[in-house]
Image (tube, rainbow, N blue to C red; front, side):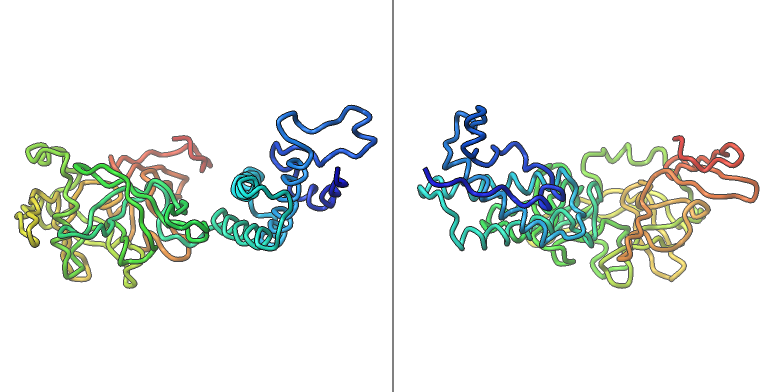
Amino acid sequence: PPPPPPPPPPPMEEMFGPPLDAPPPPPDAADAAEGVVPPPDLSDAEGAMLWAVLEVANEALMESDPNLQVTEGGVKDIQADVLEKVFGVMEKQGRTELVEEDRAYIHRRVSALVAKALATGRRFAKLDRIVCNVGGARGWVPGTVQALNEDDPSDPTGLRPLPYVVKIDPPESRLVSVPKDTNECARAEVCFGTREDGLWFTRMCLPKAVKRGSQRSGRRFGKGDRVACAVEDESGDFSDWAAGEVVEVDHAVAEDWRGDVLMAGGLAPYRVLLDSGATVLVHADEHWLVRDLTLQPAGPRVAADGTRCLKRMGKRRTGDGWESFDHTTRKVRKLADGSSDDDD
């Protein structure tokens, strides 16, 4: 039998830990004498092949993640992915030795997976509400982000992950993939009206699963109330909270045709005149679209610097302590003296 390859250098093991449940490196004669043998379902040659793949994968991990930012679980996922792909190809081709093409692929794949694991800068996060361009006469549909940076089935290299997977709202209620993180493919779901085609976006986002009669009950705000509305920021990539005043409750939105598609109308809970002079329609009475201005001051909602002001519950310091508040119910509760812990 060919001589066994040497085990990976200690620094790799110290940095990345044992490589999943892969078999140990082929035993030398002394080990074999003590009864240490590869798993029964793998030959010595296959064990050596697995270890060689992992050795190159660990080298690529050290190059791609020198500051050890990928979690232990993430490292194991990367190792498992590379093992499955490379070992599978080698086994299918009847090879037991790595070639340069294998090594190059391992480095590219590990680099892509590390970038995916450390991906930052996405405009949206899981469970964010967005509108997606699905083409056709309707064009855009609203939905909720379910996953980020998923593998693209049409990309065999695995180097170009899909930015988002989104579950669009009823009546479709299906998953769609967003191929690029651009305004041409996806936008934040906000109170439309600052856009030229804002009325169309409003029709598209009016809840379809709520009966029109039930939309009239339980409004959180009345005419004349001061509110903060979610609107697109100047770049169009992110969103702000903009101050304004409710000028109409249950604004009727007429149905309209777009090509061969009839977009149903309905009731927008509020029409709001912003302090900027623009008018927006609030298509759903949700805290992530409209808030009490006394609880939510104007400012960034989601920004490029990582600001995210979307949580239902909030907390602030008052003159004599802390208070918590609920953006949906608008209820405010004083916290115990000196307490700033979130106990909700």
